[in-house]
Length: 139
Image (cartoon, rainbow, N blue to C red; front, side, top):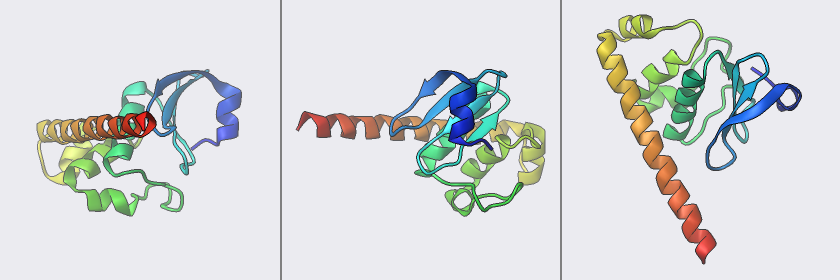
């Protein structure tokens, strides 16, 4: 995990900007930092995993990992369903698709379908939220 202060010192560029001040920043060391309001930030080895984490964040309407422990899972992730749980587990550095499939009792192909569902929902949520924001600014 990283603090916002560390990000400001080490960041090179915003990799991807989302609505409501959510962003992924590419750090000097080649890692990627997810940032959101009321979230302490979390670093990832690659952009794909950081983007999946952002999709999960939007899928569950935001969450905070502080207080869940190093290998804990935020309760909102558990409540969101199997697809969101599978996607979240893939964002953890100690897991891969084979492990997540085995843990959940499904083939790795099903894990891909779970991830695809989360990504699709997150895209729709961001699109609808952006439309609402645009409609409010037109008033």
